[in-house]
Length: 140
Ligand code: 5GP
Image 1 (tube, helix red, strand yellow):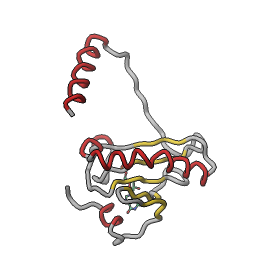
Image 2: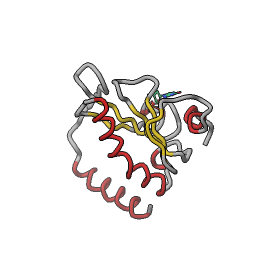
Image 3: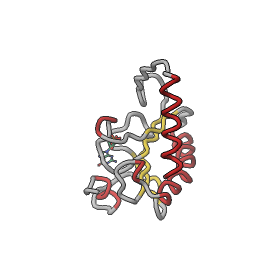
């Protein structure tokens, strides 16, 4: 994977407002927050997208993410929040090193705004699709 701005942050070559670090995980405040307390949680492993993460990094993030959500809630006094991961440029990823956004949602005007254009499910397609996803998930 190519070098990103987050590799430089991990190496301490670019400053950040660090909030957490362990052997496999690092977290810091987003430089362009959608709301106060907007935090990025990243693996030290330089994977570009979630599907490329090792089991160890994924487990380490999963273990600490709820704790960091509680910490952001407590420090900002904001009860509601979004956890978001963008994977790929079409999905609005700009930095190609996995990062989980924790974005407090204090009110309608701050935090993440989501367009959610739902459509009715096609049950015939869904049956095949669920089977295909299940088979791939089983295979790893
Ligand atoms: P993405 O669109 O890839 O999911 O989000 C990338 C995030 O990284 C953006 O919210 C952006 O503000 C943040 N970001 C980009 N460069 C830096 C930086 O140098 N320092 C920090 N703290 N955040 C950054």
